[in-house]
Length: 409
Image (tube, rainbow, N blue to C red; front, side):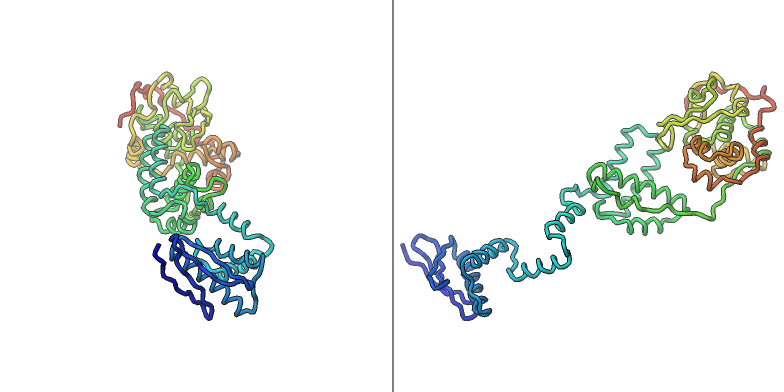
């Protein structure tokens, strides 16, 4: 076989010869501890690289006046082999390790790496905010939530997804906070978005897109405080004037809203079978409640009087979706201002003044005692509360039972 060329690899004053063998392999020849050593490699490039390592090691030893022997030499060679895939010199590796150990004090480098991987996992699915939002929307649809709730999600979720275009796992709490503060509208609207963000991030955690064993970046978001918003309610005389003029289709909406405190959306979902005339309470089923938790609200004597003509009715309590607008127009025609969310706010205020028990009122309204106490305490006097719960039908003959019918959309 034709003999291959030979050449020298030089580092400083050290020269290591490399030459081809008749077998096709390449040989590196050098001296160590006074003895000639040879190593072979499959290709010329591999042999050249190895010759550089050997020449560098010999040169370093000579420069430092230290000649490695025995186990030290083997350790050095092994170190070079371990570092080779990373393209890092032995000196850089040792220096990096020493700096890391200095910063870690008693902890080992492996412990630090394990801690980092636990908090920055590489196995999580890199889902975008939009992908997670689309999945949550589909999940809610399959859960059978109300059309009104789906409509709200369809409005808010795309706006959240547009604000955070990258993977949901890379969105930080400060980024979410900055976005929430920049939203136009009321503090309440901002808090509604905050609640939905928290729900979305927790959904992503449940799906395995975020770490399951820790809080999400959204969990620490603080609710906005609106100290300037005042609760507006109906005065007993004004509401008595409105309900007295309501027709048979509108009256249940006004009476149940004012004397049970159900949310507007809950009123629209309510059916006559949920009004337990015999047991004396209104049942808000979990699937119809905003909080997805079943609750019972006591039917007060005046409400029982208003609803008596409807005993035995079936179907929806509210026969059309925009019934609130009809009620507001009626109030305006009578010279009565229609407060925003006035029925629910009025119930909370007069009920708390009546029973003096925030926890009880919160349970009836599907809320927290702290919120009830903070917003509704001392809004009305016991005398005004007594007047509210004394609003009864004066012309019961004019109240005719509602026909059994489905909701008109």
